[in-house]
Amino acid sequence: MNIPEATGILSEKIKLLRNLSYSTLLEYQDCKKHESLEITGMSGVKYYVEIQSFWDDKPNENLRVMVEIYDSGIRSLAPLTKTFIISPSGSFCGEP
Image (tube, rainbow, N blue to C red; front, side, top):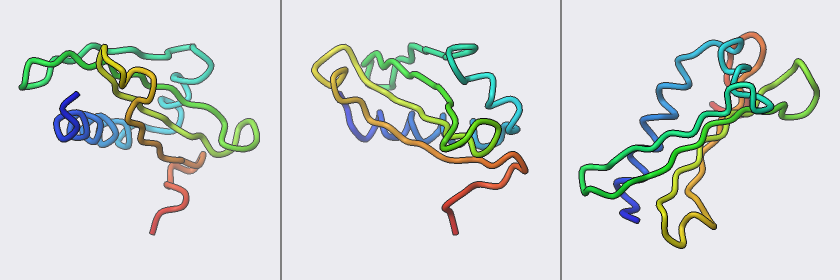
């Protein structure tokens, strides 16, 4: 896997998701809309991106959104992952 390329793809996907509302992000929870994408990087490597959300602590409170990226190699066992937490009010938790 091309780590810089994969990290860039992962960061772009996180950036897009952070622009969505709390209610829209809820759709990625509990396999309602668990999303799996196949993206071909500029290097020609095929990456697999998975998006899901789940309650961070208690139902109907903060929501953790997780995005993973991996290729078909050994990295599929240890994907690169980024997360963020959004509150029902739409603010991001644990960030300055």
